Length: 432
Ligand SMILES: Cc1cc2nc3c(=O)[nH]c(=O)nc-3n(C[C@H](O)[C@H](O)[C@H](O)COP(=O)(O)OP(=O)(O)OC[C@H]3O[C@@H](n4cnc5c(N)ncnc54)[C@H](O)[C@@H]3O)c2cc1C
Image (cartoon, rainbow, N blue to C red; front, side, top):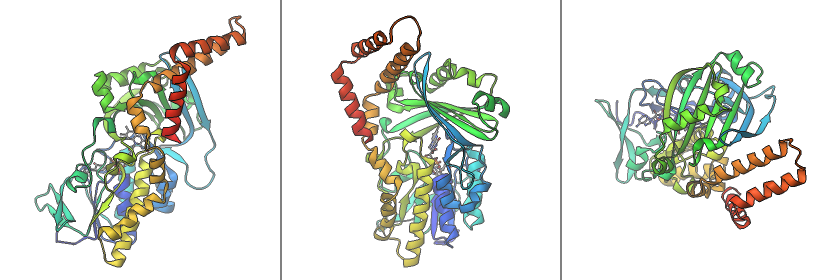
């Protein structure tokens, strides 16, 4: 490839990189999109919920053609003990027009389709190619070194979108390796079931989908959660926790997943299903305080590589897509003014600051520290709530007033009032 043949090089054809490449290509910039997998999506793992608004912001009406598994209309949060769950849920009818709020996907078809949109807009997708380093000259990033024989490629902009624990961020001098408490490890299975069985078990209209997130006992004292998401003819079932907690407890991810699948409320949902795939992946969870620098001369960082994950709300793909679009818009401006310096590329940071991406990450910037220090909060309170509800629902001749006293006694026996107040304060402070 000739020197400076392209305006921009994007590394990684996930939601972030592809959104950046597509935005630039549509505006007429010449873009190359490197993906280490033989096909986009092949190396990628995700629980599987994506968001319509951010997709439509990138592809416009093209969202209608996206390979959606199911439109999510039923979202449930389970607070679980070993043998019970307390459910908080929300069910709605999907909008008659416009993109759905949320939908499930499988990454191989979705990433392939999304990258094809970038190609159709004029981006050059180069799969099966790992970017091994950035090329730096006079303090600027001026290209990348790939694993190919004719390996170096130069461009005035490199967009780093290579996902969790990005080594290119480190090579570019923008950040450090993630620490074990800044990263979760998640394992997941795709379990095949007929669509009718899924709709019966989750009480769904045809084509509609459900998500269940499970906090409490299944993570066995570690900070994390389990999930069950419905696809058209399969379920995505997974569980994860902070790497630092796996190291401390020595529980293996495989054991954790087996225990989750055997939970008395989870097992009936999976019964008769056939495991088609077993996958594991990291999620960057250090939050805003652990983010790398997002731009410099000739470089922008997008998505998981930039720690853009809001795990409390199960959001990552949408932050990556929105940031990818903003990186693309920044590049279009830089091309127009003919300046790819950090001063011009700072526009990317400004766009992010003005958007939900950095505003949400700032809102929760204390949360990762609380989650690492106090995994007990995710065990004790779901259990107390479950026991309290169970007590009130048990019809055994004991008066309701006496039941209230019992609940309070049980609560204070396990947690003195001042600790409850402190926990509530810490929780509020981390999420306000
Ligand atoms: C188990 C799990 C469940 C999740 N569930 C959800 C969910 O339900 N909803 C949600 O919104 N988010 C979820 N997330 C998070 C979401 O997957 C990520 O936030 C999102 O994929 C980030 O997009 P990205 O483009 O930044 O990175 P990625 O999707 O990781 O894409 C990075 C791409 O770069 C490629 N690559 C890496 N290194 C190189 C290299 N050196 N050269 C070339 N190519 C390279 C990779 O192969 C990959 O295709 C989940 C994550 C996991 C692990």
